[in-house]
Amino acid sequence: MSTDPAVDVQWIEHRGYRHAIHLCETSEGTGDLVLLHGAGVASEATWYPMLPEFKSFRRIICPDLRGMGRSHSLDFIDRSVTVDEVVDDVLAILTHYSINQCQMVGYSFGGLIALLVNAARRELVCDMVLLEPALLERASLGALRAVRAHYADAAAA
Image 1 (cartoon, rainbow, N blue to C red):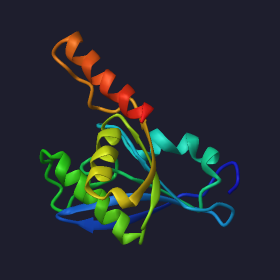
Image 2: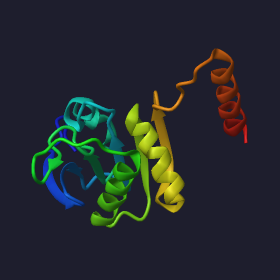
Image 3: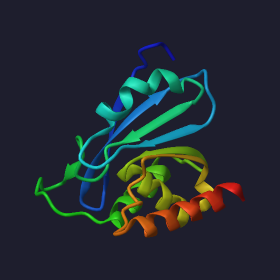
Image 4: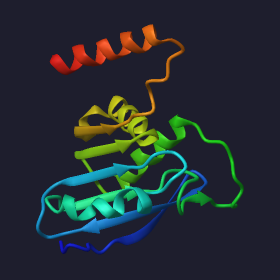
């Protein structure tokens, strides 16, 4: 992959939505990397500047999540979405690209989706990186500290 990797935007229709998939392929690397952006943004703004750093992967898949970026409902009507719908979309995208195992990076809302994809199909995600995952909102500092303690325990295991 060159310093400015070529990105092919492909389209997948799934459950009433047309999903933009930003795909970068290289003959140099191995394995698949799936990058999930945060809420209200898109893959292009979030991940394109970093693509040259991922040249060790054979294929980099950056979907615009449901209703964000270039993805849209087939009738172009804005609707609220659930995390379960987005998880189902990501699983359909992985199936479309015949991904049996991948490394996954999720930023903010994408971090939450990565965790839920992993919970639903643990065999698909061999490694995961979460950047500011959207899951630490707690009403009190004590509750937040308790959650952080559980993460520390899990990391030590």
